[in-house]
Image 1 (tube, rainbow, N blue to C red):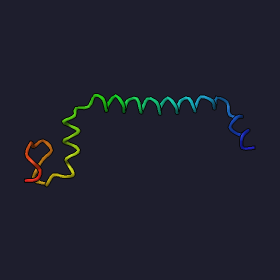
Image 2: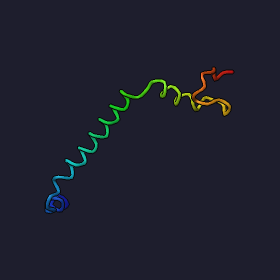
Image 3: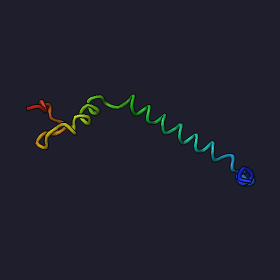
Image 4: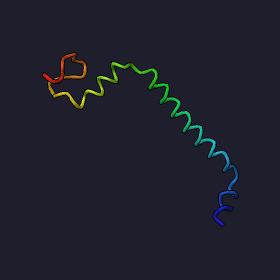
Length: 65
């Protein structure tokens, strides 16, 4: 009986296609972002949890000082 419930809805076949398109476009956009992003920005963001409050992400000083 559960199988026939979804089959009886008119136009239900489009929803899997829409969800796949959203899924595919999201990961395609994420891939483009990863390939295009500035590597210095990624490094600065990765160092944020390790820096003291007196240092900022744009400082070029050694965080161990």
